[in-house]
Structures are given as structure tokens and as C-alpha cells.
Image 1 (cartoon, rainbow, N blue to C red):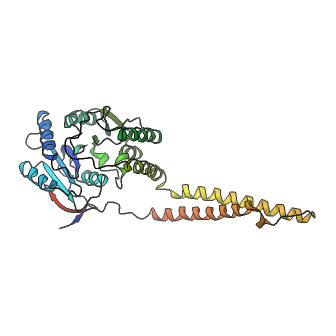
Image 2 (tube, rainbow, N blue to C red):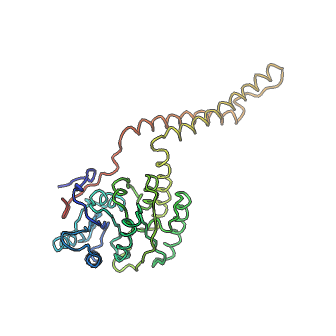
Length: 338
């Protein structure tokens, strides 16, 4: 039976120490090794006893291999491993948002399923959230095992993100991050905004954001699911959330201000042209027709654009009173979820 992720999948009545959220697409080979590694780290740090102090939540983002069957087998062997299966591929942001809503841990750790993120980093990330009281800690893969076609665009993206957000992070898009539960229950992640989660968190009032240098490992199984287009999408999404964070609750401030300026600019120039013609006619001077002057048409365009922008701001104000459904993901099955 299909359900949607628009409502919480679990009721967080029982809190755990840690929730590990793993978005996965066609990662059947790496998942058993990754879960075994996580369990080893948890046991070594005292989180693996009874009752369990952690959960592993795997979001199957429309895999076409046998990832879901692997998740089912892993959950049967260890109930701390839970799964949510999307009916089709919705993307990493959808997987993270759904995992955030379902997570029971006081500290939420996200990592990729491809074994390039090391579970050995979990204790350090956990301590930074619990002991040092960070809202969010982002991993920094200082030494990367990626081709230059991936590392150079990443550096450019991070430089622009630092300039726009004011955050001094080196790697905004690192999949290995740690969050206080309050953060993941408060922020909205949709579309392709997972690359900009630190910016979203900051603009939602979670300002204690730190960074931890983490190990980056070569990919062991499969191939990357992301192409060069992700960097273009990342820049566009960055501009989108910058605008939304500042003007989503007051669109009239943006569109209305531009509209008024454009309208005044056009009106002043139009009046100036007409006044000049009237003055010349009154004094017997040779006067050009207003319609013969390109500036007159530019002034009319400015007036029309100003009215349109003002109207857009007014409509935007009306739309802010209505909620948008941005998290409608069909879920075909779940494992271990309450």
C-alpha cells in the first residue's frame, strides 16, 4: 500500500542517542559492509547495548537493483536497521527530509551509502553536538579521492556559498554531517537543497555551525550517481534559498520595492518628455513628437514593468497565506518503522 511522506512516519515518543540516516540508490553491494561497520563503531563506544541506543535508517531512493531486499535482510538480522522505500527516485533531498522526519535520535548523523564516508567519524561528530553544543557540524573532506573535474567545481561552489552565507565552511556539500534533533525537525529540505543545508539551518536561527575534518575514502562499489550538472543546480538552488529566506514571508518588500522604483522612473521620464514638448510648443519652438523619442517608449516599458512587479508582490503576499505541498513522496514500503 502506497503512503506519502507528507505526514510523520514515526512518533518520536522514544528518543535514542543517535540516528544514522543513509540515502541509498543502487547500493546493494555496499550496504551490508556499511551497516556492519556502523554497528562496530557503536558497540565500541557503548551505544550497542540493550536497549539499543541508536538506529540506522536507510532511505531507498527508487533503487533498481536489489537494495530493498538487502535492507530487509539486514533489518531481520538487526532490528536497529530500518528502511523506507520510495516508489521512485525523488533525489537526495527527499530522502534526507523523510529520514529527518522519521529520526528518533537526539543526534542525527547523515552519511552516503557508497562507503566514501567513514563511520569512524561518528563519535567525534556526536561529541561536538552533545558536549560542545553545536547545532550542526559539517564534514570537511580535506583530502579527496575525486577527479579534478569534480574537485574544481566543488571549490568554486564552496567559495560562492561562503560569500553568500557568511559561513566559513570548506565543504558545504559533504554528505557526512551531524545535527541536533531540533535542527532536522525544523528545517525544510526539498528539491535539490541538500547541498545548502548549512545555509538553511543558519537562516532558520541555528547559528552555531561547526566543521570537522573527516576522512574521504575511494569508492569501493558501483559508480557515482551525480554528474557535472549538479554544480549548476547547486548554484541555482543557492540563489533560490537566499531569496526565499529573505523574502518568502514578505514578497511585497522585494517585488513591491522594485515595482515602485520602476514605475517612478518611467513616470518621471514620461512626464519630463511631455513637459518638454509642451514647453517648446508654448514658446514657438520646434518640438519632436513624444512617440518619435525612444526614451518615451522606455519610460512606458518601465511603468508597465513596475505595475507588473507590484502585482507580483501583491500576489506573493496572498500566496504566503497558503501552505505549499513540497514533500509529497510516495512510499511503497517500510521496514522496522513504528
